[in-house]
Length: 180
Image (tube, rainbow, N blue to C red; front, top):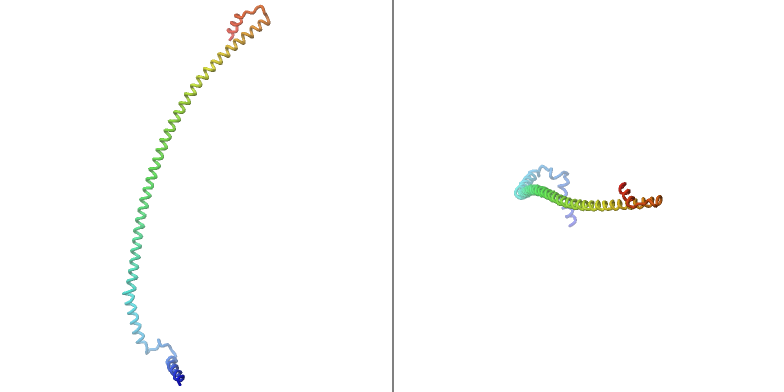
C-alpha cells in the first residue's frame, strides 16, 4: 500500500507534464513570468547601476589616469633624453676641440723638437763635413807630396839608369815640381 501511494503520487506529479508542452509557453503563467522578469531586470539594473558600473567606471577612470600619468612620464623622459643628448653632443664637441687643440700643441712641440734635432744634425754634419774636407785636403797634400817624392825618385832612378854621370838631384826635383 505504501508503494501504491508513492506510485500514485508519482503519477499525479507527472500528470500536469503529460499535457504536452512547455510550461513557459502556457498563457496562464505569462503574467507571473512577466512580473518576475520585470523584478529581475529591476534588481539587475539596480545592482549594475549601484555596484558594478561604478566600480567599472572607477577602474576605467583609474586606468585613464594611469595612462595619462604614464604619457606624462614618457614625455618627461623624452625631454630628459633630448636634454641629455644635447649635453652629450656639446660634451663631445668640447672633447673634440680639446683633442684637436692638444694634437696641434703636440704637433707644434714635436715640430720644435724635430727642428732642433735637424739643426743639431745639420751642425754635426757641417762640422763633420769641414773636418772631412780638412782631412781630404791633408790627404791630397800628402798624396801630392808623395807623388812628387815618387816622381823625383823615379826620375832620378831613370836618369841614373840611362846616364849615371849626369844625375843632379836638385835639377830633377825642380823639373818634377815644374811639371806637377
